[in-house]
Amino acid sequence: MSTLSAVDPQIAQLIRMEESRQRDKLRMIPSENYVSRAVLEATGSVLTNKYSEGYPEKRYYEGQECIDQIETLAITRAKKLFGAHAVNVQPYSGSPANLAVYYALLSPGDTVMGMSLPHGGHLTHGWKVSITGKFFNAIQYAVREDTGLLDFDAIRAQALEHRPRLIIAGGTAYPRIVDFEAFASIAKEVGAALLADIAHIAGLVVAGAHPSPVGHANVISTTTHKTLRGPRGGMLMMDEEHEKPINRAVFPGLQGGPHNHTTAALAVALKEADTDEFKAYGHQIVANAQALAARLMEHGFALATGGTDNHLILMDTTPLGHPGKPVAHALNRAGIVTNANSIPFDTRKPFDPSGVRLGTPGITSRGMGTTEMIQIADWIQQAVEYIDNGEQLDRIAAEVTELCTGFPAPGLLQTDEG
Image 1 (cartoon, rainbow, N blue to C red):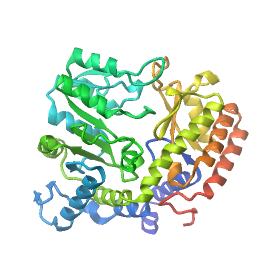
Image 2 (image 1 turned 180 degrees about the horizontal axis):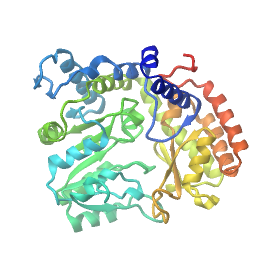
Image 3 (image 1 turned 90 degrees about the vertical axis):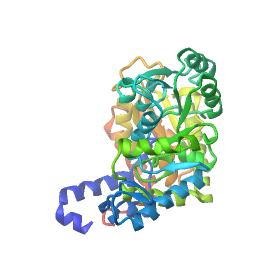
């Protein structure tokens, strides 16, 4: 970063510090990952200079000879990888992608039905502080209090009562398989469209480690990072009936020119995902999460649903005498980066919740396996035990850094000096 260092040494230094943090800590927020050096290079390319309103072969600006080929490659690779009829790679992130679905299929005031945010859903599934909860009549379904699992009898009863025009399946803190076929059956019965939000599990779907919503959902939305290991962006997949409305909703409905550097980086990530190595990676994510969950339960941690089927774990830390936020702070000092998170039926406020959410995509990208999960669970237990002991937390952090040294982070320089 010699040029950046000369032009803006403050920003250059902060980037170096962030690279060191990502290299030397266990990054276990389920929505974070590492991209390859190739994805980083595409993201930082001259494509950021080009403006490209419209779609391939239908642009409003000249000079699209390269851009059209790049976007077409990204679309073609996504269609092949997911088995989708049509794909839009232009959404800036997952939230605008979801909003495009609302814009394409609904009118303000229409009824939508999504998973409650405190029960594992997302803001854009109709939560009250989101535009999706303010402009639409949002009905929220929940998990069972006794098991933490989705109750499809209750969901069906809600759908029959409220007759939503759109049902949303998927979430951000639900550690079990999402039954897209069951959601599709309910949607068909009440005449609703089905949106599958696979932002967290897209990489698992590609790998065959989670069932695919293709063939069940009318529209599928996803971010392009997380388990898919691409750049920060969004993507929409749709059946033939919804192709034109969705494309029109993205542009010109909600956005102007796409971020071409992101589109190119996504094309690279999709190529990387179309390999046997990536499929093995997806299955290892789940194996690691399950090994980590089993060891945490041995240490007495209370896990939502009693375990996991995917990449994430949601645990209630209050039985250990501490709510989620101080536990997350202690873990961060100990070199284990997680996030405080509400749990279903949480009695605490969202900014000071009862739980902690953690996952295995990033550490699996580093090549860690089930053996390392045992050690990591032991460190988590120690960090909670020594939550107010800075010396012990720093000791754990030093051991974490030593472990990380043996598992280089993809895409990163491995020393501060490069």
